[in-house]
Image (cartoon, rainbow, N blue to C red; front, side, top):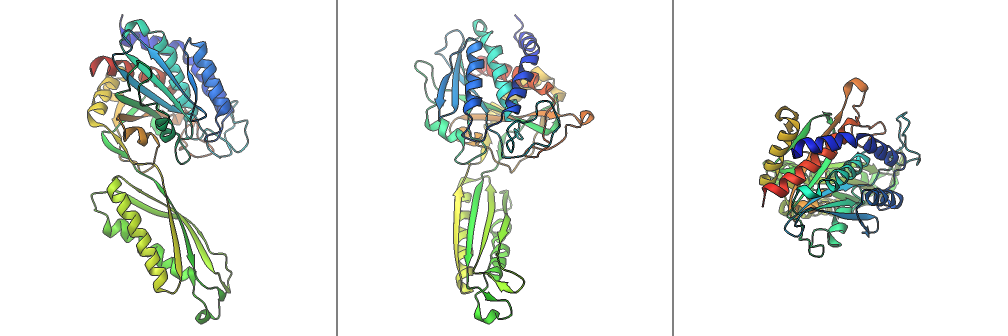
Length: 402
């Protein structure tokens, strides 16, 4: 049997099913760690394919094993996320979200549908491969502490009975910058760590016409914001990409009122865990020192988020070659560093991992909006590609890396 041709045939055969699955999920989105109906739907689909999912992992996560011949010899994992975002959908489509204020605006409906497609394909190919493929459907990618961290704590990267722990894990994410039919890979560092910054600058408010009687937290805050940029412009190595941005500043005074305090929220992102910790210490020291020097005080709270995501080079190089074989070399492209964050990074800190991109853009049909926007959508041709490609990559990795 020509395995590649058979996978493509099965993916094509399941295309309508995958579109229906994706549209059902898109119509019924659920927020992070609230994916109860989604999890039930996924479990029901897996059972209809003759599989036996383990449910209730980290409350709403699922794992299913697809065992080939000699299932205890080796394991590869595939992962999809299931949660949606608190966004009001603006698309006028038949499958528009029915849950007001909640939307699959990051493509997790497509990720879940694709992995369900892979489960359907792989379940029909069990006589034709050796080893086990572990499918991980996780909750809460969009919200700290990240569903991946909870799934790992629950043991998804460990042995499952006699089935060994996965040696590698593969994740797929939609990319609206890539046309449908294109796939993107990057070896090594890919996505950044992410930390949330919550800062309160305290002073002494009063009349704007009598600043000598006040300790102006607005002025203190302005100095802090400017001074903190030296963390990325002067303290960080120029060889280490880092971003520090404040997107929320609240000073509830008035034209003639100096407030008692100012509130800030921001984000810090980078690609090295040692530098990340050092930067946290530098930021706190600078902010607190400036506030104290100007007569005020500063509370600088850092909520540590996801680590940086690294694609293991040898694994990624192999998978890229497999993808070129499946898709054609002209349809596989290089990706640049991306300072967004993904909780798939937790897996990449534990075992060999590869996180690649699935093109979903179709300019002719107006499908061009970015993720996390009210008009995000995908060209649903990507579902057949995604399901087939993940199946091919998993089987090739099982057969060629042991």
